[in-house]
Amino acid sequence: MTPTPVLSRALLYGAILAVAIAAVGGALGFLYAGTEGLISAIIGAGITALFMALTALSIVIAQRITKDDPNITLFFGVILGVWLLKFVVFIVIVVILRGQPFLEPMVFFLAVLAAVIGSLVVDMLAFLRSRVPYVAVELPEDDSRSSS
Image (tube, rainbow, N blue to C red; front, side, top):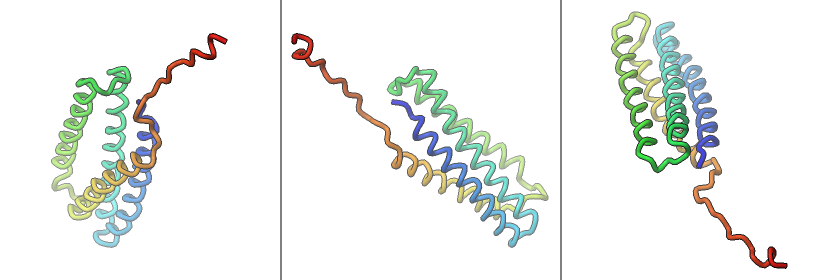
């Protein structure tokens, strides 16, 4: 099974989500806290795009490492490893951004919250709308044709 159609659709929807969070969150953030609110929403949208791309990249890397055999433990190990990396990167970003004068914490929190919920919806929609066969069927050759 190749996850490329699902990943392509997820990345497209993720890009739309990141732009929507930047636009809507930026506008609302600007109204709420001025330039700091705008910057906070854009940073939240950037984190959204980065993490969704890392998710898709982890699946592509895992697929290449395991040579298209997703039943191997290594496949899931790569996915889990990238998930842990994303967790650590998120914590590092939050620690670095904490207390910065250009960041409005409430706008940043709401942008990240919208990103998390939105990315779950995006992944679900991408999976549900993609047509990927999940059963490989090989039909036996017709012996009657070969003997005629």
